[in-house]
Amino acid sequence: MREKGHAILDGAHVVVPVPLHGSRRRERGFNQAKDLAEHLGLPVVHALRRARATAPQVSLAAARRHANVREAFRATRAARQLAGKIVVIVDDVSTTGATLDACARALDDAGTIEVRALTAARVVTRPP
Image (cartoon, rainbow, N blue to C red; front, side, top):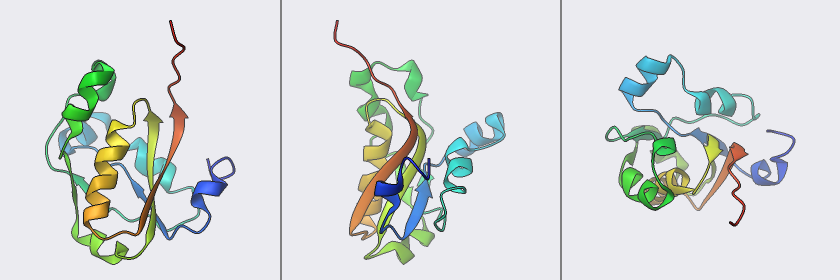
């Protein structure tokens, strides 16, 4: 990810992994976004938290994904250090971008000057 995402990482100050809800974290035993973020060569800041549990995005139609994660993320106290910074959100997969968009909104509210995103994979669908 570091090599392929160098253009996104260049000039960024920190990476912020997409958080799991506590219940999902306990169930899974790890946070894949956190694990990915730790290998990108930038400081990892846990600047987001899940304000509420959400249905897994993979189980939802594209049209429902934005509503599912709307206002699901909140900035943590650690986000205060991101004011005026360029931040890269890290997640494992992007399908519609709904999760990344919801996270970016929370980081924008925390005062970041720019929010970028880097994912390990992107779902690509072909037109019918």
